[in-house]
Length: 151
Image (cartoon, rainbow, N blue to C red; front, side, top):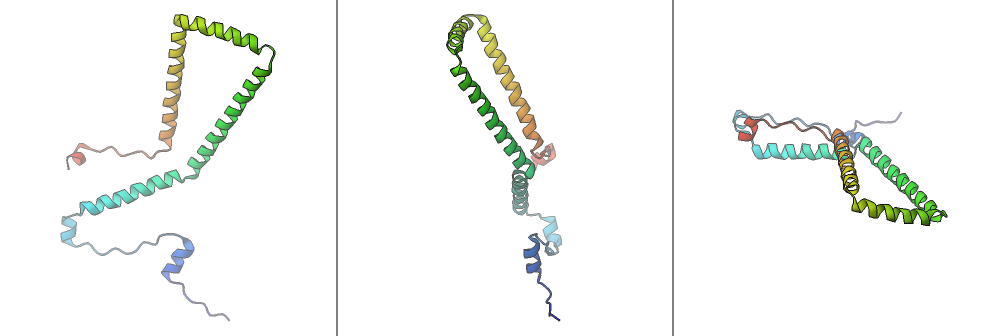
C-alpha cells in the first residue's frame, strides 16, 4: 500500500494552472467610507489589460487572422497568375496599346473623374464594412454617464 500525501494549495494551483481566490481581509468601516481611488484604478487597469489580452489571444481572432492571410495570399496569387498569362498572350501588346488610348481618353474626359470617385466611394464603403466587422470582435465599452465624468 502506497502512502499518499495531501497536496498543498500551491501544488493544486500548479497542476490546474488556475488562480485560486484568496480570502480578502475584512474591510473596516473607515476604509469603506474612504475608498482608495488609486487602488481602484490599478484594479481597473489590470482588468482592462486582461480583457484585451483575452480578446487578442482568442481562437476566433487567430482563426480570422489565418483566414484573412490565406485569402489575401490566394487573391495575390490569382492576380499574379492572370498578369503572367496576359503578358504571354499574343494580344497583350494590342490590349496594352488600347489601354493606353483608353486611359488618355478617360483622363481627358469627365468619365475619368467619375470613375475615380466611384472607386474611392467603393473603397470607403468597404473600409466601413471592415470597421463594423472589427467592432464585432471588440468588447463593447460602457457609456460614461455625466455623473461619472463630473467626479
